[in-house]
Image 1: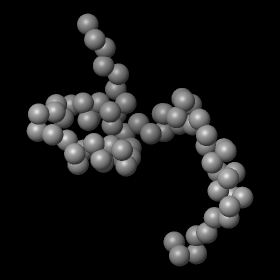
Image 2: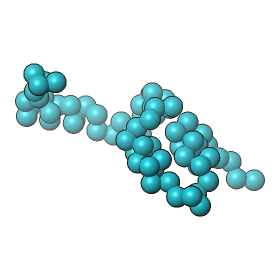
Image 3: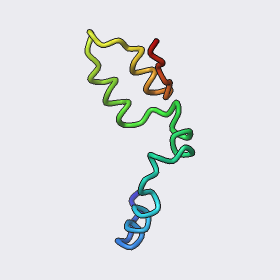
Image 4: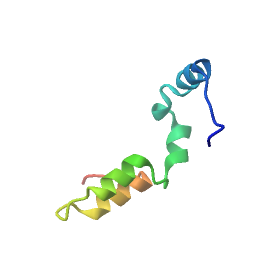
Length: 67
């Protein structure tokens, strides 16, 4: 990793290419089941009173249908 360097131009290009990716269905599908930093944080800060199924639903991107 010590040799990994990104120039300002590369950083700008990467930012421009990934802007809006959260709204893209392919990006969403690729993240299903991945333990991202936000999911890790949610797991670490989960309160005893919180239903752990909600965290699993978030991880698996399951949609909860309300009756």
